[in-house]
Length: 361
Image 1 (cartoon, helix red, strand yellow):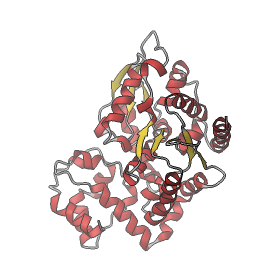
Image 2 (cartoon, rainbow, N blue to C red; image 1 turned 120 degrees about the vertical axis):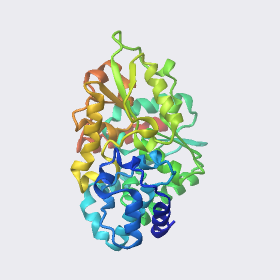
Image 3 (tube, helix red, strand yellow; image 1 turned 90 degrees about the vertical axis):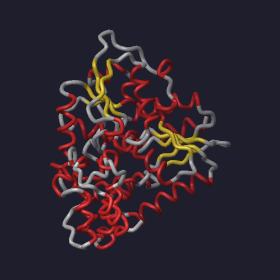
């Protein structure tokens, strides 16, 4: 749907109730979706769509069922099309994406007869390579003929509105998978999960947590049953089956799991979404400050490496679910420290080599 069509729909159907703006710094700054849509139709909008995290909370709370974030993404796409130089400020994240797609970092290793591949994602592979390796080892036990694909799903280009680049790059991934007979993607990255779910609907796409059995794969709980909170990534907003499986895993650890306000379908963005921090760091950090107020001194568990990293910037004790499954006590005590660049790139290279050796056996 074109931007004028999207704007026309939002303008016509938005009742200006204000529910979407209650938790959103972007809408609090620029106005309600219906009014923004009107300015788009009049070609007089002075809204910076790159300050929207594209988290779709506005879509979830809208009583009329409209999707303003789709309009904001289309506004980004139009801006990039008219002025490609906009992307210069995102050189760092786009270079990260390009490196993930490069021959140096990527890997397509599919044994004969392989129908399912582990597609861990860039961030967790670099920041938590040992936890990623353990996830792979556990997954191999339940998925015969499992292969591995290391590549970047190109969500940064997608979210920045560079849709031609995204479509071309992502289609190459899908074509390579098709040529190898792959029918199922199992990922540890919520962003990769959302991209494949949205743009490769012929594939069966699951998150790795859906394969783990809490009674079998989780470690024994702590005697004190420490209280923890859970943060759902915004890319999993509309996937309740994944959310519930994650909760089952955490409960299997015998932890005192408490929900954060505004979670599950109404979860908040961690602040990293849409690369907002590149243009307005304060808006991006506002999400983390809200989570800090809600979590207090409790540790927050999440299953997105990006969320874990960004929430920790607000002083939240953040634990990735993969680390929790690797070693519960060390994870909760803060002894498992995620790596940072440039070590993350070295980790991904070592992990690639481990995958190659494992699949040669």
